Length: 207
Ligand SMILES: C[S@@+](CC[C@H](N)C(=O)[O-])C[C@H]1O[C@@H](n2cnc3c(N)ncnc32)[C@H](O)[C@@H]1O
Image (cartoon, rainbow, N blue to C red):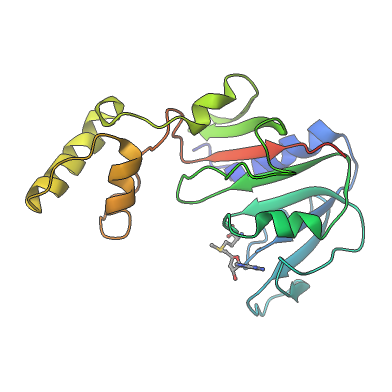
């Protein structure tokens, strides 16, 4: 990584894209994450109680109504369950964006009406050189990788893992990951053809 937080880089690029000064950023499931401080007016909501120096509203984001129009919704590891409910509790400004990222390298479920493949405008992808925004061939981010196409290093570890347990190696990376994710000690198996860890999906629902 460049030393810059990919979350912050993606958020800054998203703000540039919508061209709104001092945007209203809604951050449901913020935890104690302050990464976006200073980038806009932020409404923090978390179901858990966090004692910190910021105004976190303790509420369930699936029912909490956001009063002011929102320019960017930041769903960073909030999970997929109930994300549509979160979005029905707010009004997104015209041209506003919904950003979604999972820390276990998953992809968002494309359930309507706000988060569909059609409303996916692009993906912010970070590697050691920084973050770029990609808006072509977005299908690749949802295509499963055959196991024989993942990196030799990870394949070797996976093979060892399954063989030590007397099990067959699954044929798809997604299947292998589903079986090992709670017990293995290596970081993650890229399940998708575009399997970078730092992928932030940007949706622009029709308003
Ligand atoms: C894995 S943490 C991520 C925290 C933060 N977004 C980050 O990137 O560091 C998930 C957070 O979502 C919160 N959360 C889960 N379900 C929620 C809900 N329905 N409403 C509000 N917060 C929720 C949890 O309390 C937790 O703080």
